[in-house]
Image 1 (cartoon, one colour):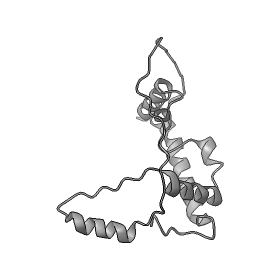
Image 2 (cartoon, rainbow, N blue to C red):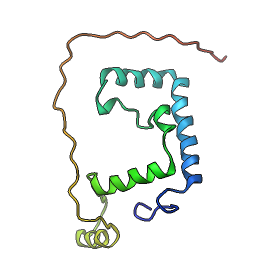
Image 3 (tube, helix red, strand yellow):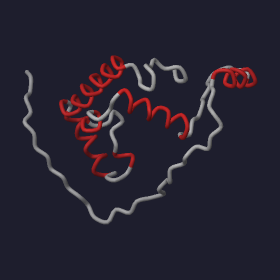
Image 4 (tube, rainbow, N blue to C red):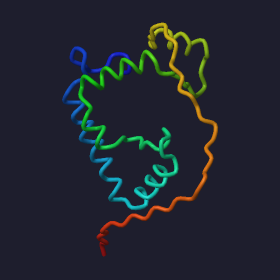
Length: 140
């Protein structure tokens, strides 16, 4: 699945991509319906502003609108050529057998992964209070 995805030329299958975008859109929009989840998400956004950790794993609606089957496939190829990839195998295994299977099925071209700089700490200079109000409908 990773090395032989469903694609059309230099693009992922458009029907699959549109289905996934629709599903992600629903997941992102559902965050605001769950006030506990929304508040936790907003807390992380504010506490970690301008840091990668502030990004919601499902993404955001604005970025989602820009994704096409072609742009997603281009990012996939970039990921395979640049990202650091770790393979975890858990269980009662024979290490040499796993290495042989990985050599057979995990085919990456020779590459040097691009490493992102890691920040070691953040100094909080001042407390920040944010108050948001929204209409809430309660069920009985």
